[in-house]
Length: 137
Image (cartoon, rainbow, N blue to C red; front, side):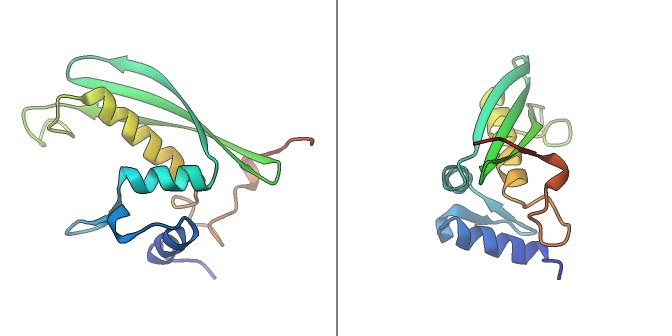
């Protein structure tokens, strides 16, 4: 049976030994904090390499290439994080001046959560067969 988003979040919480401090409850959704993301990354042995795509005073884009090894089956993904400092949230997506760090954090979070199964809403949320490569031991 297909897991709901809440069930997936609950499973990730338990599987990765997250604590209540690792989740922030927003008015409309839940956010896993950076510390929580780093726990998931460490627990699942996710390796990430970053590339700077663009770095300007008000705008940054970071590419994350991430790898997960489950029993010598490697899942490799590529994703991006960006940050735009505008005069308000109407013309930007962050109000901080450290746009590069924000872009890196967003790229890391997306990569970790994708590999942990949060973004895959098919069957049991662990099916990544089309992305898997068998690595000989």
